[in-house]
Amino acid sequence: MQAVVYRGPHLLQVETVPIPSIRRDEILVRVATCGVCPTDIKKIHQGSVPPPRIFGHETSGTIVRIGSAVRGFQPGERVALHHHVPCLDCHFCRHRAFAQCETYRRTGITAGFEPAGGGYAEYVRVMSFCLPGVVKIPRRNSFLEGALLEPVNTLLKGIRCLSLLPDDTVLVAGQGPIGLLFTRILSRQGIRVVATDLLPARLRLARQWGAWRTAHATDPNLPDSLRRWTRGRGVDSAIIAVPSDDAVLQAHAALRGGGTVLLFAHTIRGRTTPIDLGTICVDEKTLAGSYSSDFTLQREAARLVFSRRLDVRPLVTHRFPLASTPDAIALASAPTPDSLKIVVQQD
Ligand SMILES: [Zn+2]
Ligand SMILES: [Zn+2]
Image (cartoon, rainbow, N blue to C red; front, top):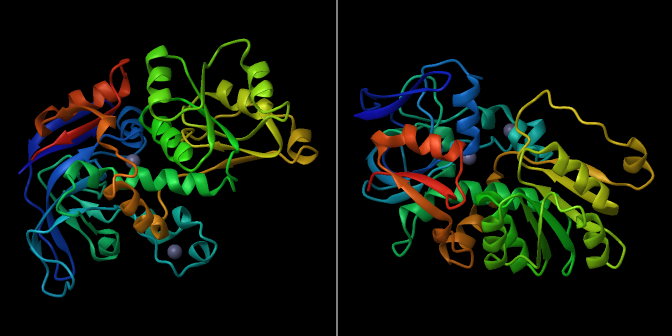
């Protein structure tokens, strides 16, 4: 089969590799769609994990083979996959810190080499501990919608950290694909979203996706506007969907006492920034982070996407064939004003 193999920093090669063989408690899926995700891009550019690997983890496709011990699935079924599934039993899982669970941290979907998702290949093997993360796609929904369940799940998990009430005001910094999804989900929940970005085109989109107010991220009047829009209180929460330290400081300053800034895009370790610790203690401001998905929110994410109460289809602006995955990664690493979610599509 054809696969896009990571061979070292910045180096992706289209190669012919064996179709993965499966054990009796595993399934084989023919990949239809795989979303391009910033965490893959980070690994490809930074060389933070050793090659060779086949990346791609926002995957949907069709089951083509089933191990003899597997129950509940049939060949021909269209499914969405989750490459991380927690054990639900360890110390971390009991604290709902699923992303810290050792089982969760193992990647259970592979197209060969060290398991890394494998979605940039024709077929993937789904290991037994990831079978609870296999979600059937209803007939009326597309593979594309299936592929976006995982990122939507990560957003729902992030929003849970914020304990919001209706009519709260939330600043969403960064209106890329993730920021826009936050804007839509929150506005549907009756939250007033203030959306910021550096690109005017993204601010126009943010309004279409439900933002209550928009502002250029470097607008010098933004702090005043945020106070005015919240009757002098400050915003209840802020979500930082862009890896900008300035955005964190701006949001932290704009936060009301007792509010939360949620880091969603600062996925690189070693970044530091000065924060007035008194604002954490006396003003009770929280600086929180959320990473990856929450297994227990899988059904909620599926209901939201498959019912189209959250229609993710308009988010996808570019589709690439498998052999052009390097171009898909290149575009996602240097987004243009008209590029949002980018997918690799084989169906
Ligand atoms: Zn992802
Ligand atoms: Zn666990």
